[in-house]
Amino acid sequence: MHAQAVRLIEARGLHLDDSQQRMLARLAGWLQARIRPSAWRRRPAAGAYLWGGVGRGKSLLLAALFEAAAVASKRRVHVHALLQEVQQRMLAFAGHADPLQRVADELTSEARLLYLDEFHVHDIGDAILLGRLLQPLIERDCILLFSSNYAPAQLCPNPLYHSRFKPFADLLQRRCLVLQMDAGPDYRACSSRHWGRYMKGPAALLEARLAHVPATSQLLLQRRALTLRGMDRRTVWLDFSALCRQPLASGDYLQLCQRFAHIAIGDLPPLKYCSLDEQQRLVNFIDIAYDSGCELWLQSESALDVLCAGVSHGDFSRTRSRLAQLRQEQVESLAC
Image (tube, rainbow, N blue to C red):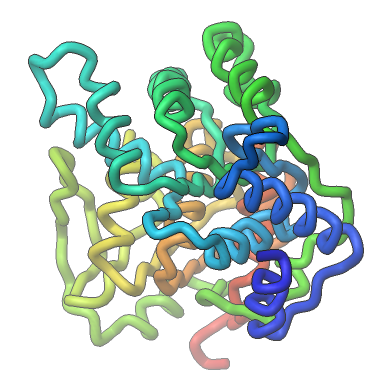
């Protein structure tokens, strides 16, 4: 499995550093033992929880192992998408005793190996829901993979709620192989991959680029009307205020990214002047947009470094790393 995972990574033109090689070997050994346990060896941990700084290759390693694993039923899902799915599935069991147990039954019947990418929680409702889901997944012998920027004890860091999530963090620590990636360079920042554009310049710049997109005033997301600048079958165009200055949820952003291949956001302000709630919504949106594979265009009158300066949000380092992979364009006026 280790050799196959290495080949998958190298086929993408990537090469692992020594630290990544050691981590991949350790994870591959654990996963092989988990898939085919031995009667005379100690039972391996139920899951593997890999955490560390942004851009260190956590998702790269786990995705390669996931693909190489000889498991017929397996699934990779981002934590935001899982939360939305679990909530929807629970509605189908309304009126039944403990619908979350029934959802866990469904999930484990559909996938023996479940990879939860970008595992992090800030909202206490989401934290408790995910925490309560972990126990039945482990009890049903589901093989779990987690990537995260946080150690289990650092999840749900808000001091008002942390004690309520602590039993679930302890469960992760106790039942999973918890490994920390060594500190090192942010490889994402060095990547040649561009998943969109960052345009420094006046709002008219974006308007000129999207002149072909029909003007549209609103889009209904779940039960909320979203104010738009324009929309066609492939593209949706709106301003930062519509995206982040109203109480949109991760489910709304998932719906946007599932419906449109191209999303354009205009008039981004320097984020240090935004509220923590607004920063959190942008963090959630960027996570979902990046994971969905959609093309993102952002426009601001501030350079990217200025836009991101002074942001105190705890998850913003991951967002900043992903924004660095947008192709940066600077146009001061349309005459240029």
